[in-house]
Length: 260
Image (spheres, rainbow, N blue to C red):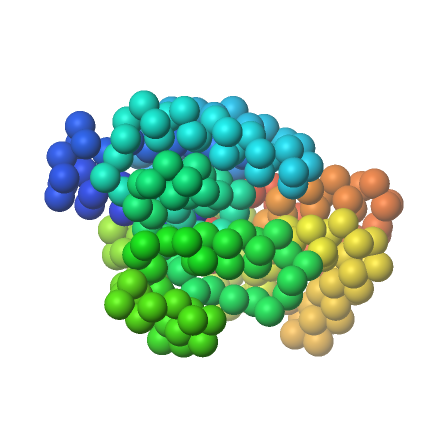
């Protein structure tokens, strides 16, 4: 989300004036590798406000993000509040809409059909009350109209990640990531894994890693797995054996990752 917002915020500031844009950081992610590194590599200014939500249960994070965002929203009384994507920080929009402030949802209409996912519940909630819904594609728009959303609220705007790739293209190409990891082009497979239903269920996690082993043997190449700390913790906790052809990395090289 921070990567995508790195191109949106400057556009908003150019259009409406920097002094008229307020950014709120939930603090859901706070370690250097999952937070600060993005601001450093993408050269983003620090957010205006930090909620310092931290870790916790879904109920804890949800209640805190709404409660703490509300005081900031009421202080600034913005013309519009922008909720992005589907993580818990998107629920700041609840505080805005309950105080009669319009809400725009970017990446609206995305659906997995998997009701186990907190993100699926979040995106449906925000879409249900948003005043403006910016969809990445026609499928997302169809999902919304199929759910009864007024089509006049919907705009297909594409995905911000395309703007990210265009803005940082030269730096991505100059990252030298293959050399840093001693990799040959097209001689490896990149993987990442972080969804709770995959990494906190020991059998699912074991099956995925076994799958990586089969793939690495079939194609005779190394699997480069850039993993969320939650995934690494689960591998250690359950003492899961990692195959020789699977190389585990922590999240790293924000721009370089696009060149893998």
